[in-house]
Structure formats: structure tokens, C-alpha cells
Length: 506
Image (cartoon, rainbow, N blue to C red; front, side):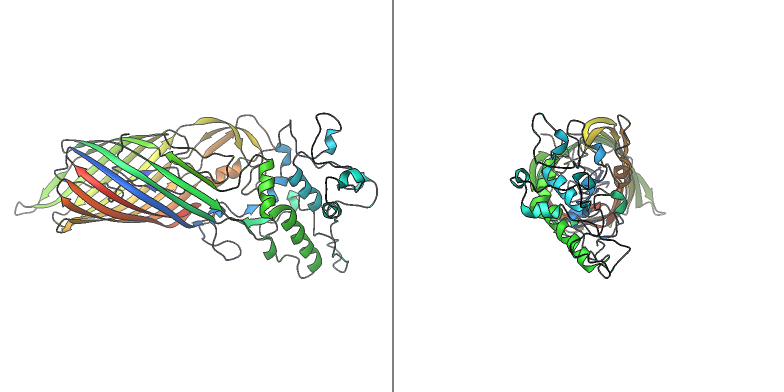
């Protein structure tokens, strides 16, 4: 492997938004008498404490801290019912009437069988459509002997629940639910029915390195990458019990609604079973993988300015670099909810970086820089796309798309105090990073899908602070430690990274 790391780089990655590779952080510094070759190896560890949500807040609608899985909002277990016309033609989603059975036979009356047993059962219960009379009057489970061998007495009884008459609060509603929860037009984003907060136990460890050639004092060539192990272990916190809407006038029906939602949608086993029916895994996920590789060419031109006495007063150093992100890292596996990309999610990218540094001899060096990454367009098959703007967490259905990630750019203010005491150096960065909205188009026009939701939620930003210390043991070897932490942003993990570096100079 060939490793390197000169600059903090713009990357399309919402949990590692300003990737860095050594104790210099952004590392846009001018260093006199730089060795012609240096090698750095940097083990690191990342942890996460919550996230910055859709609006940049750390707290959810209930005032509690958002879980890492709430980055785009609380999960909505009612969402898979919405836009179900997007389901595949060979396995359509449907709430059949009459005698319902769990598994369809190879041939026969296919319309009376459940293609997604747990999800459809929840829909039959929560649509509140039971009306006394023939089966066509409402969707429910018949209580004949054949059906009783498949469904429990409770499931059969719950399927016959009806909706309360909201116009008459005096009606006895202890056995009724508030409304048809499977109807998208009844969904209220401010309500908590069927909503989940998803805290995640996140950990990532890895190794990054640097391989750098300096051609005189003006040019550098770098190649940089790394590898890592990460894990995400989710927990699901049901927010339904916190729903207060209608409790005053319809206490019983509200309690009935909460109980049925908890039983058929938000129980942890039900969450996993429903997700599995649409080929989506919501269990713990871990992986060891390479990170993306960056190849970069850099030029700097120091301009020394003297004072009236002819002594060096200050040096201005413009720095410019161009590079290429190669997708050597792993991509997000869309069939595993807690999979993560270890780079730019498989997209090739071009990068441009620049900085203007001011070096005061023997004291500090200040840097003002910016950079951007631009990504290719790709055709992607069988991608999970929302079929409703109210789907959060689980997108059940797939289609083919054309996608181009938006540009990622950043600006930084940096300070270096080189050898400020003996052989100890200090580095500090303030970094603002933004990712612009992605471009997503359906390969074939289909009104059942709602890609605009993904487009609107694809942008993110962060504000980051970095500090590092480096001690030169001998001229040929130094060691250091650094940390970087997210202090602000939207739609990102609140990541803290601790990284140590051993540098060998030749």
C-alpha cells in the first residue's frame, strides 16, 4: 500500500466531514527545508455523541437528545403504508378483503393472501375499516376455523377495530382507534404515533498514513488512504407513548391507538420482522474496509518580505493543489440500515485546494484556505427511494436512478506555532464544511416515487475545531497526538476523532 496525507480534504461523508491524516490537521503550512521524503503512520479512533438533525438542533420534538439514527428525523413505522403503489409488480403490496392467509400459494386466489405478513397485518389492524356486515364492508381477518390456524384470537379481534367518531366526543370509544393510520392524508408530522428515536452505539478505529515526495521547495506529490473497522449497534425508542394529541377528549381511543401501534409496528421484534419482509436489515452492522484513496499534486511559492533594516519580516505563501478521489473504500449497502460508506460512497471525485499563509519568523504561521470536491454522475440500479415525503428510516421500494453527488466545499482558518518550546509544535484549525444537494433522477418516470425527499435531505454542513501537538524526538522522527470534534452543523453525526502520528523524515 502507498499512503499519504497532506491536506484536510473535502469529502462527501456525513460522519467524517473533514477527513485528516496527521497531527497537523488541515496541514496547509509552509515548512522550510522540508525533507525530500517523509512517511507518517496515524492510528485513530472515532466516537459519536448524538447528531445534528434536519434543522441543526441536537434535540428532538420531545426535548430529548436526538439519537445518531435521527439525523434525518425520527423513524416513522407508519411510513411503509404510504405510497405502497411503488411496490414491485411481481410482489405488490395490498390489503386484500375477505379470508386472509399469511402466505400465497403457487397458484390460486392470490388477492386473498398476505405478501408481507407482518406489515399487512399491521395495516389491517390500523386502518380502522371494520364495519358490521359482509367482508366487502371492511378489511379484517375472518374468524373461520381455517384462518384461526394462522392468526391468533387477538390478531383476529384487533383486525376488527373501528375508528372513533371524532365529531362526537361523548361516544364510547374504548375499543376504537382515532383514525385510519394507514392513510397518508391523516399523518401529522408533529404527532408521535408510530415514531422511533434510534440511538446508535458507534465506534470506528483505523489507520491512516502518508507517503510524500518533495521536489525542491515548490512542489509535492502525495498519495493518501487508510483502512478502518466500524460498528453500529442501534436501539429503538418508541415515541408513541408520548403522543398527547386527542388525549383530553378521546382518552380511551388514544390509549387504544397507542397500544395497537406498539403491538403491531413499534415492538422491537416487529420492527425487525417488517424490515426483513422488504429485504431491509435493521440489526447491528460492522465492517472492516479500506478508505478512499486521494492522489494530489501541490505547488507553493514563498515570497519573503524584508523590513527597513533588511531583515526577514514576514513570508507570504500561496499554496495550490489539485487531486483525485479514487473510490477504494466500501459503499453504503442500502439493504442494511446501519451500513456506512468509508469514503465518497463509490463516486470518483476531483479536488481543488488553496491557501494563503502568513509566516512570522520564529513565532506563528497563519493560514486562510478553501477547497472543494466535485463528483461524477452514475447510473444506479435497484435503489431504495422514498414513495412518500413522510417516510423516515425505512424506504421499502426500489427503482433505478441517475445520481450525482453535490459539490463538497470547505473553508479553514489555521494556526501553527512551530517549535514554540524546544521541539514541541502546536496546530489549530477552525473548519467549515458544506455538502450541496445531490442530483437524483429516476431512470423511468414513475409518479409513485418521491426522490425530492432524498434530494432535500442530501445536503449537510459542519463546523469543526481541531488541535494537535507534535514533538520532534530527533530530526528524523517525531510523535504527536491530536483531536478533532464537530461543534455545529446540520444532518451530521457529532463525531470526535483522536489521532496519533509517528513521522519519519528522510
